[in-house]
Picture 1: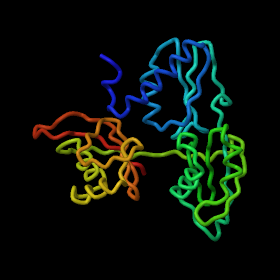
Picture 2: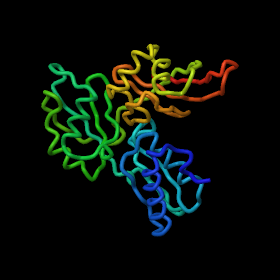
Picture 3: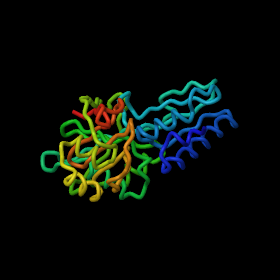
Length: 257
């Protein structure tokens, strides 16, 4: 039995990466800092590192409620501090009385600078306020080069970590039954759509599973998966309880409020 059998084939390369990080920590006896990881990647890191006494892991992305976090994998003697995660917090100043900025515009502008997504943490909104969290090693580059988002001219002001916008996501859970764990079936059930309407959403590239775009309607969902549909929000498959007498899956789904 290997750890790979618990994960999808497309996740095996990331597992190999985590094993390399673990080897670096145990062989050099020094901590290793990752880029930002989404919650699915964090779960994989936890599983790979496990309860091994030679290497342990902590995650932090700016606040206890952060979705995207950096990981510090460290030997047993080491005690990580907030500084070890090397984060920079920027408040984005823009003429909010005249323009509206949305999440896709922010991410698009950041990605246009030529850096990979893993260098950026959460993008936080609170009414007109907008903050971004980035890896400290790219903070100066971002400050100099991010001059506009959409049609808005912007200025970045670095803030202390205690000034971060606190976003607490709440989930409403409900039970349902589905004929299979196919993605089109799950999307139809979770978002109260027909399968004929769910299919073009998937094939149109607006559906993600665990933060990865999936365009196969027959993709097999699993317990713990996070599903999102652009414009419809997201949900998670909290639990698969088993099958009913009619051979349907009884599942618990959490929907973001």
